[in-house]
Image (tube, rainbow, N blue to C red; front, side, top):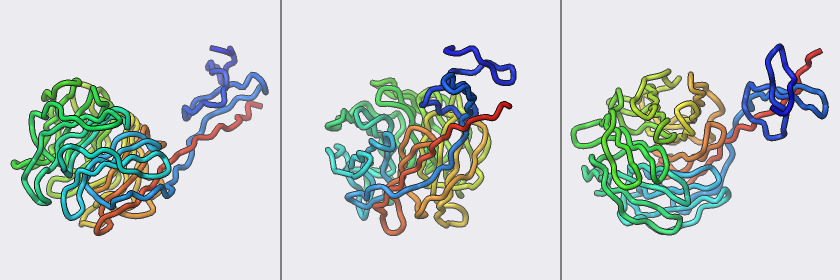
Length: 325
């Protein structure tokens, strides 16, 4: 510890300008002040428009470096676009056109897997996995179970695929990717599709989704099994969202009962969901990417018929001097 000061009897860290841990107290040895980090108020802002308006693809990456992989308009697409924080541009196509796929990783090293490979409405559920190296796509080992409208988490070498839909209905299947092959691990507690998932292969979250109606259920993954935790405030499916881990996530938009699109955004702190600032435009079947509940990207979707909109979510925490007189 750089300084031995205490606040109310507790030791605190020496202040530096990049402190961002909400609730933490720091001591500024230069001024003699104590400072606390308070949560900022998040907001959505417009980002660059997609080159091709579409829905039901997969998103990966962070707010300033994302990919939108495949999807559909009137037909299933192999199109991939890259976001650089300002604008979208087309990059190398996936080998197999698909929609309802999922993804994990970054714009330098990522995966996309599963989806529908037949016409819209088809039961052509795919187990295909493709790897992105920053330049092009290559086919890898298939999932053990072909499905669509599932969720993903992790990186290009350590990923999870969970939930979705297949011929028998909603799936609870979870599969783990070790960089070369998929293997089945413990199932979700509630089979469902079209929710929002994210995180890493040892700490993930799955919120909302669809069976016969939109759900508010949230489950977290600890690397071994899924546990039900606090529900969303609003049941919904066909959402966008992102997660850093099982304790840090944001979910936005989607379809709520009895079938209306929503602008509602909720933030997860590891214990409960809190409603925060709304999207500018309600939509469903769209994608999200980002590193945490303080920085995310929402893109594409159905508004209808297809959306080219991008919105950027940011929460900026603030440092506040604490009066200790």
